[in-house]
Amino acid sequence: MWKILLKALFKSTHRPNPRVYRKPVEETRVRQTALEETPPSAQPHMSQSDAVEQRETFDEAHARPVAPPRVLEGPAYVTDGDTITIRKTQIRLFGIDAPELHHPFGKKAKWAMIRLCKGQIIRAEMTEEDIYGRAVATCFLPDGRDLSAELVKQGLAIDWPKFSGGKYSDLEVEGVRKKLWLAEARQKGRMSVWEKFDALKEAERRP
Image 1 (cartoon, rainbow, N blue to C red):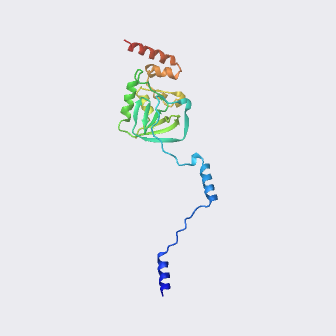
Image 2: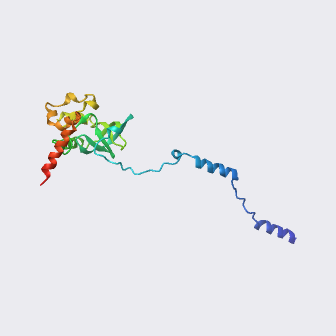
Image 3: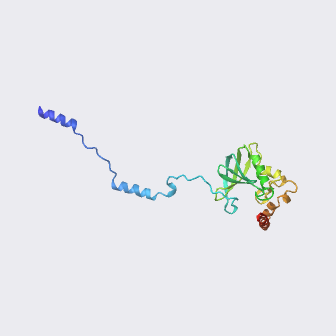
């Protein structure tokens, strides 16, 4: 009788140690080797800062086509007459040349672009992008108007046939190339004209 009770008690209290599964050595080595040989491109991508290095002008020498054209939409921050920023992407307006801010009519061109973009959602169809993330794009107002065309029609930008193929030349107002003579000089490669203008302005600022 006592033997039966002792067996029952021992059976209810004794618990065998659970078996711990351990991977065979070879399996562990194979998995480790696979991880070591995984190329960096297959590893999870770590997100980086979305800050984009900004430059004053589009880098044509290092530009590449965007295919298919990428589209950005949003409010536009205006830098000058032919440069805007949408969602932290700096965009040079396609096919036109507006005066620089420190050139004659430069500030007027900027304010004309501000009036066009104010309160609007701009659609930018990007065709080229440089290594800094800046782009060339044809930009449209919600009603379909082309920002490049609108600035040319106001006499505050000129067509740049080298890039536009003459798309906006018929929209130029009479005498605009004499009015925006520094932009005209740039298109003809006469950068010495810019240098003389800048030197003159620098001399005027001196006491």
